Length: 315
Image (cartoon, rainbow, N blue to C red; front, side):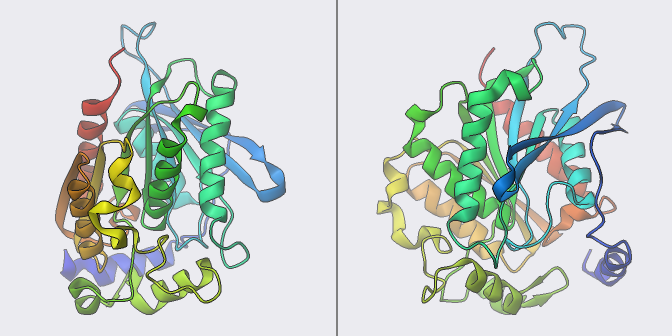
């Protein structure tokens, strides 16, 4: 895989990752028709989500319910959105292959909007979905099986939104958080990890740029040991230990500078007494899911399918 990285990166740059896909639209993936539409939450802060709805062809479609995944995209808190082609494609595959109803959230970006704007937007998106469920989601959405997920910085947002939701669980009337999906989570700390030092400048992740992402996010004067960044800094006695935190899937790549952070995160949750599954992809670089050509692309959906259907609420 490492030998193919330069060619893949060249193709990625030539394809222009900032290309956007419009909605409403439909696409066919593995013989599943996925429809998209955009749902406005608060236009004053550009808070909205793209809804990905897979068709149901099951013979028991009258009783079949699909889990809901509320997804937060990566991009260092400042780049991309649900309408970027790379995330529109990713969430379309996720909708078709799990299968599930996907709500991919657009949140305020840095550097114009600092911490905790992104976490507030994520929390408010879940509250909106809970309050307007039948008005904005297909009838076959299983609100009792809601998974919060994200990749890279989006996985960071997903974690902090989940913490706030489980702390204020009584405020959710319909939605039940069944699990957290954390794909190559973007966490950090003042002390460098071995993998950060060894893989500091890889094609899809540059440590200097990552440090700048934290500076753009954090309040003036804060460092990388801020709790938004170094979530495990409090050790097993952190507030998470006393929360009903959902089962968590952490996916780590072997050519990703963030691999040690992901492993620490999984170990920290385990030490806090939480149910956690760590899935290691030895040949995966950061943001491998942008590339359908790599074998880990399909592995990702297989892993997610197994985890999500293991933890869906019995209908």
